[in-house]
Picture 1: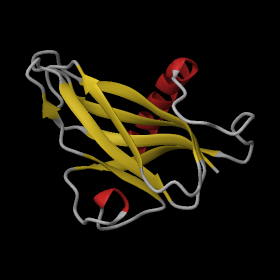
Picture 2: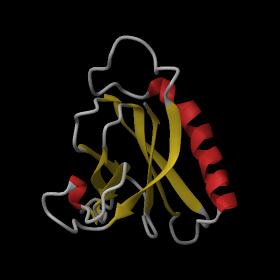
Picture 3: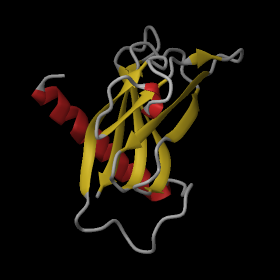
Picture 4: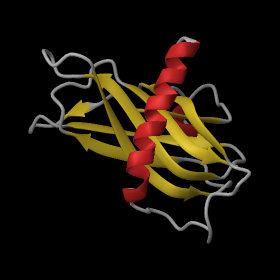
Length: 154
């Protein structure tokens, strides 16, 4: 992605997260207190969309980054919904308010793109190796799926 497009995507993601964060369910035990002041908001960690490349590595990826992850290719259910699942990891970092943002083409004829935010965990400890996530989407299409991890990192 070009710099301007990434900044625009980051701004869009941040605006949506501000609207969604208050109602996000807490799915893990978090330390008492708010996100540390020293934490940095990360919004551009793109996840690989595809099958596992190497067994035994973080999320099955051949190359590991400080923060990364993978989304399995979406599968369509008999009711027309799409199942999206995957995992992410962070080496030696604590994560707060982790969410996965899915960006994909809208249904044929609808034009544009759709954005879905999946709240994952309120807190991920430094020693947690892989964090699984998943969601069922009720969209007619998930073509050209891209996924991003957004979180506060410390």
